[in-house]
Image (cartoon, rainbow, N blue to C red; front, side, top):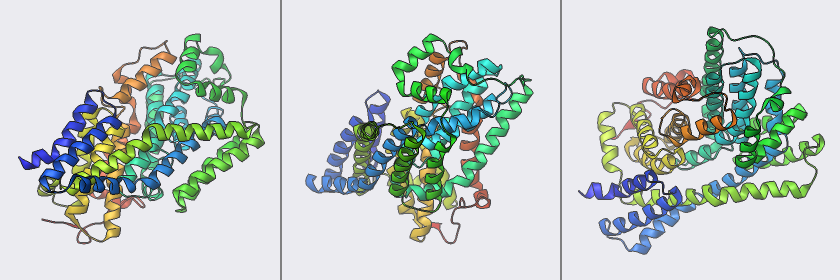
Length: 479
């Protein structure tokens, strides 16, 4: 009974989110309920319990700065022509009905890494590639699924992605370490997915006539333009840049930022450098004409981060600290340890918990905030090993939480992600009736989710550079 009482704040949090209460409100209420329970069960003063929460929130201070810079960099990249250059590189290589899906996939992969946002990338690219698909005679369902899969890719590995930052931060992992460890495996997933998109396109017998990208805007309906103007006005700016053309050297800031991350430079340096470089290159390309406008973009990014992501991060970290103080997840950890024969099996259990919570809450950020402290505590309290090895295990926790959250958001029929993707696609491309079944062409999501469970469980992840986990006897379960 006591164990259920300690877990009740998580249940309350899940119920509130499922009933449409914003995670900010849910997490704050959950924290105070957890604090009250902790006061009674641990016989502490309420002020002492709240101090535990405050100390936990303090751990998020650096992450708050990272999130604000990440949001600012995304605004800068989308507005200065960096995003348009990334798109132009791919659509100007000669797109046909047979290649439009794979080009859409690779383009959205590149743009989502550059901007760190799956929904923003999808909003920017779905009108381009659905109408380009119409021009070249491609398959709408396949192109739609390709845009969804590619958009989620960068949200899972992007250095400036809020989900990457949040999931890593909740595990005490540096974002650059997470990206470096994940990159080879993610690259393999991209390659396999691209092959699948092209192979299916060939099997459908799609035409090989090369389309003219300049016809995209001309072919768009007035309804599409109106929807974008209302929902994502920045996308029209990007479309205009793609139509008129921007210098391809505008992608250099992205390349430099990624290179800095691979070289293990700290995240703040990477993000700050990206902002400065994009502005400098933008002045040279003519896409930046005023420092005042640039400052406005940076301020907009800071405001967007501060209005939700940063505040949610503080509440989530405080909530997790109080739950750890009263060992609320002890029974869950005990069950996982009992059914696990190896440490890697325990991590798979953590990954399955991420999937269950994501399907329950219907929102990936809420899943990460809810389950992040749980799976971190399970590893910290139930695995013996060096701090370096446990750091690698927590890194896999972060990857499970993020990859499963972001990619299954496009596979779970009742998820908010599915509603967003299908709703926006239908609005900007009314010539085709989108269905849930179209999303099962999302080879990226399927390959990513299946492979992370399979590789972790079997230990075959050791054959992928930087991706292997510590093995027994270096790490072992406490039984």
